[in-house]
Length: 230
Image (tube, rainbow, N blue to C red; front, top):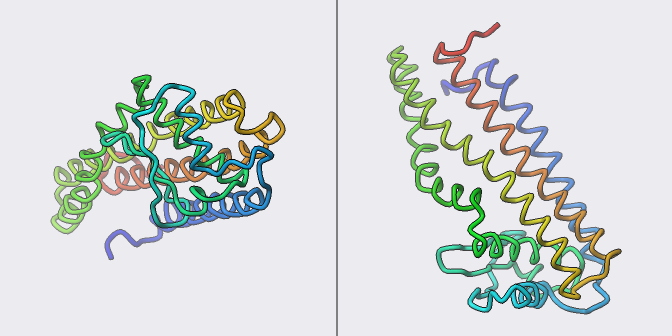
């Protein structure tokens, strides 16, 4: 495949594989460790999220169970919090941390947090740009037409911006979760520290994704001739 050359392997594939692998390993091991420690309050992830939302008077946000491992997310279009079974049903500190983090996104939505609004607005462009970019880059490389490659780089840059904007969104959601889970009486301060470790570990996956996206864009810019190899 035209993308697979030594420059790609050195600049993108190996760093991305290493960073992503390390981040995923840290996240899974940290979640597994604190999934064995139950909160003194005994509340489940779903109950914790509900308490946190109710404290902020966000009674119109629904909470549902969804399938998958750590496939938890907040859908601002329907104001719905979707939690995976191991988060929804468990009373562990890991589950509570993840559930409250997702509730943090609901708080951001209610507060009209600008980075969240920007990320949501970028979703359609990112989905289109990520796929279309490869078409323009492939055609540009095959035809040796720099103009097409530049268009491909611009389209892929949207995905890079999305990855970068995601970082403050995810970090702020964790900050809000750490604060609110104590104020709502879900966990005590010591338990909050342990739950916070799960959130900090999960944040590394977003950092790894952003770094990989940036490296990929730099590679495409280099292949297009817009960036000097030296």
